[in-house]
Image (cartoon, rainbow, N blue to C red; front, side, top):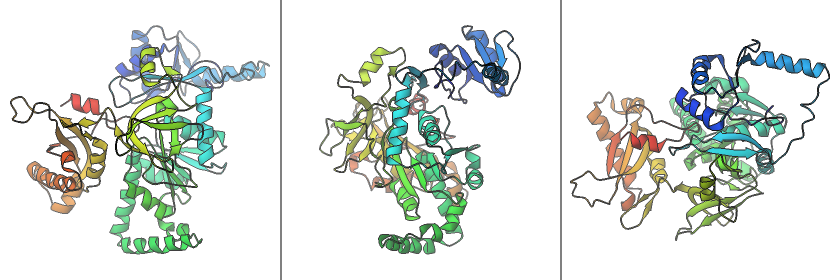
Length: 492
């Protein structure tokens, strides 16, 4: 906030980055100062040796005076207070230029080379205004922050938006503490990603089934829906026990960054929580589409924000094509990379998102996949892995999946160009043991393959999964829980 409102450019970095990647960001951004927590002291020693251009290393929770390049943040705050008390108000008098480059986000991305996205204050302010036009945030609201602040989605929508509206923020202590933190903070809104919403949904429903209340809950959903249709909303009273598990005050859940299973959104609306979806990229700071709370559309990624124009380029017979976005929230460009900037922003000012989707007659955007992930069959048909993954991830025995087109092995009878639709799956071993008892690896494979074949029945023949791989361990992910496909495939 101090940097946005004063001098300098902020470069938020992922605290989970290994030191070599952190060093790369420091070097590429030409950082003159690093603010770090005491836990990162060893990493800072290495960076000090390797990147001598950094002028200051500012340690948080420290009041040590400036010695060489090292200084404590508490000491700087003390110096600042002394300057103000002595009558120096130069910081308060700084005039903010809305067009000035103020923040540099390095996209973790699901493609190998992270890009530096340059944003100015106007981009951020336009985003706050855009959200406020579709969703009313009140001073008594409290947003529950689960995602990391170095991510544009969280820092703009989860941090700047509530601050701009006078609301408060509760920061989750970690994924293990979501439920106790919800009960302690009693938030009114959660901004999150599909993986976390789906996990919450599964946990709540497992609890309901375990307590044998699932039939009652389903009956009460039908009753309360009928009453709501007649203008009587008693959902919060009827489903009080579920609300209490989530802190008691929850009214909105916003999911963005990836498509979500439609049934999750429907269930949340059925118990009285407004379920909204957003769409955008770091390059659009980030929100370019959002579901208005007064007209939700579960399954869509929302409507274009009031300042933006979203269109589909070269739509196919289903109306699907690449999503193009023209918006005042659009980045200034990629840092020191004019060539890449020109590739994604055309002469008319439209940003080519790389996402595939369509827009319905009501103006809602629906995403079907990423152009980079698309698998093209020999006869020119497009297969979007996300569509198949969503079906696979609904299977109880499957924890997570990644679908890709595998090249046939040398000497294979298959046509050399025809890719084999392959599912790489992490089994849910707890569920498998619960359903089938303890199984050998071969038997686990057989169980999963049987389930994959059931999913294939829901797909047209050319989209059917032809091969299965069992993945050990976890998929490597971005900060918004998207699988880093390039990393996964490079390890094949």
